[in-house]
Length: 327
Image (cartoon, rainbow, N blue to C red; front, side):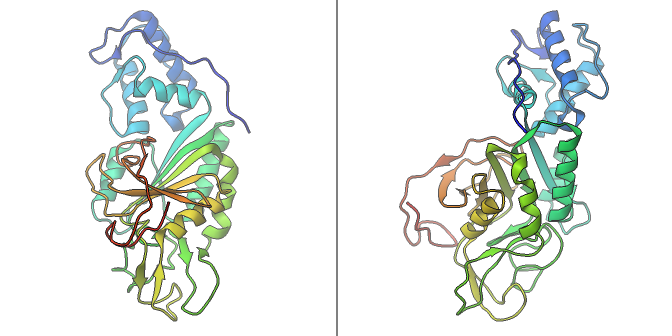
């Protein structure tokens, strides 16, 4: 499965709400939206008239595309900016998937905010649910690869799970529930020499997505303190043994390894702010190494790749919640 080669398009003047709306530019936007599958915010299932006229249907289509891809919608397509760039990305074969915990799972308000903000997000209860829905979506529009998968939910050090937090709901040890997740680590009890690894169904299910990512694919685990290290749980994941210490970077590397080793996986080191555009300090890893950075991917506002690495090495006390020893 390879990328689709298409001609990059642009508009000369803004199209849409408050735009200049040159007929040729309007036709470009209308025709481009018609080429994009509805899963990614296009109108391939309900074609716009390519007539160069900006009416209610064209405005509605522009806004839906923006809401699907950015969680905001101003109804304006400007030359060289986000909306037209995203249209080109999708027509080039790269798509973004936004995963949010399903309604009915414990929620601190930020998750419901995410559900309300996005148009066409994937709501899931489990890793298996996420994998099956993703493969179904990609089968409906063959040839697409995932550029960014953003998974929004509660989290804690050493796990990415929904409705669990960092110990309050589960008595201080990683959940074994079938909520998202089983994307978590099975960390050896004290005295064992085995390396931390994914456990639960995620160990079998996540590899099914490996071939669906672009070579520079990115997974964003959007939640608080996912990459925090040196956090001690009271018991093991099986409620035996312990206490034991989890390094959240092991989780990021384990998820990358499950996806083939090259897909980058990002998580927060400190509590992310629920306001749009604020995530705080983050860590990004492949299967072999990690980088500390700022900026991150603004998971509530839309996947971007504005991660800015911070030079190391780091020592004890450099970051809240744990010690980094990364070059």
